[in-house]
Length: 171
Image (cartoon, rainbow, N blue to C red; front, side, top):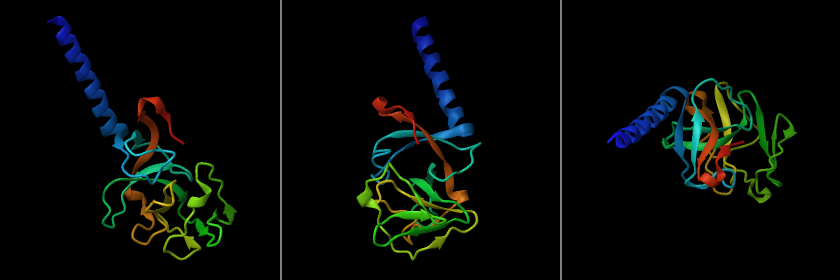
């Protein structure tokens, strides 16, 4: 009986720790879709941070659009407020403030233009976000998603917890 109680207490403590993390520090999300492959793949579980972070170019975030796509999206920040983003129509190369982005995590054939006109300046309080798998990602390149308001960013993805073979920090 004592062994069963001990096991119950261990699970209760683990549950409370997870609950505390989700309420105060961050959350756990399940990745749906293929827009962030090969960095993060469908079915991965990630931990994201709610508090105490500053958004930077290259950060991967959990966000919502406020435009009818209210499921959480996982995207990479490419443009910060005030940045000018350009996607070259011929090469698909992305530049921010006149400097070409170095994106070693991309398949070079996946830089697609989208349906908005470039260059575009990111408004105050908003972010230009892209998926790493650009050929299938619905992101800021498309008017139906557009720029993401800061209030719609739920957190910064920091750690993969599943699959166990890929546990670790996400960059």
